[in-house]
Amino acid sequence: ALDVPVTGQFENGVGLFYADDILHGKTIKVCFKWSVIEGQPRWEQAFSTDKGITWETNWIMDFYPL
Image 1 (cartoon, rainbow, N blue to C red):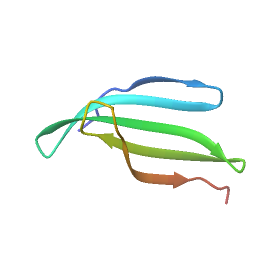
Image 2: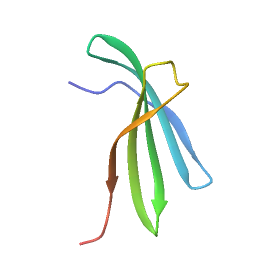
Image 3: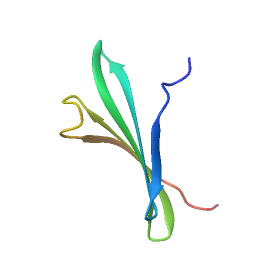
Image 4: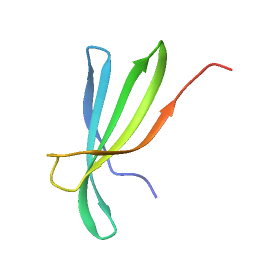
């Protein structure tokens, strides 16, 4: 199955992308954040169960060259 579409943009080197989704039968908002930490790309995922008032980051990936 495909994920739901996201909307957002990069601004000042940070990309913020948002989507509405369903988790355990409840509607949530999802935020995907792209940034650069110490010269390397970082991707973060956060969920909000209160329509975007508060966010809980639940996944962080740092990317490094091999």
